Amino acid sequence: MTTLSLPYSNFFDQIESLDSALDLAQSAFGSSQGLSLSLPSLLMWHDEFTYAWAVKNQAQFLWAFYDKYVYAPVPPHPLTPETLFWAFDYMARVNGPGPGISRIEGLTELDLKTLPSHPYLLRRTSTEYLYDRSQVSSLHGDGFRSQRALVNRWLREKEILFRPYRVPDLKACGELYELWKSQRLPVLQGQIGESMIRSSQKAHLRALLLGETWGLSTWVVFRGERLVAYTAAAPLQRDTLGVFLEVADLTLKGLSAYVFSTLCRQWEGYAYVNTGDAEGLPHLAESKEHWHPLKKLALYALEPL
Image (tube, rainbow, N blue to C red):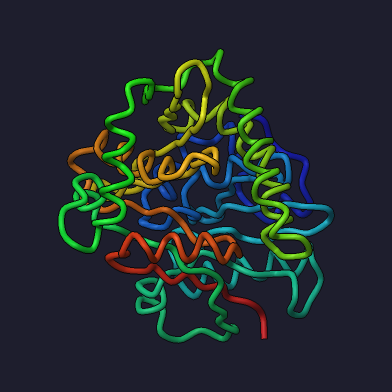
């Protein structure tokens, strides 16, 4: 492992790049029902952030460094008043005092119940959508009538092929992202979704290149000779599957429904599937509601007062 040259690194007993300490970080941070709290979700964004794993008095921390600042994308392990104090103490040294930059993200309502009293400002940051995986894969019932019709149409399509991703598919996946981006951006000018789609392109490329080493399973969909969709998933917990990527040609009606349902059929044994939050995209929030979420996972951040 390579020791990072980071500000105030002597604050910790040990600090390493997340890439080099992935096995060690997995033991403390590798099992959460939250998609955005998972290690692949962080590693995808390595072009935007420098991620580090750190230890102090046997407590573990994950850090995201950008420009001259740092924040905690997930809570420390274990989550106690003492580890929260250390986390904010370190961030104050790097970021300076006061609110606005220093924060600990990724706290669930369960986390808050185990830590009922804290001298910090609590802010809700996002909502992730969890579904009954078996319902999405089978599409039984009146609530899934429209999805069932769309998926059945593609199941009858003789030229459709859903198979695992291969390295030679990378170029076609990149071309599909460009097409998908051109289809999405015209209705998102000036909105938060525009910047999200633009910045996600490098994250998708990194996931396609390195995702297998993080535990991601990526699938592609061909219609004839043309790659028309790709998706990637990995277990979050023993009962929860996470869907990290999904890109599909929007001109092909029902293709996205086919991809989601077919992906869920590949992962029998998991009770739930988490597709993350809506990323500031109104159409995505509407689509997620259309699939009848079983529950929604609220995520929070703590900030200095």
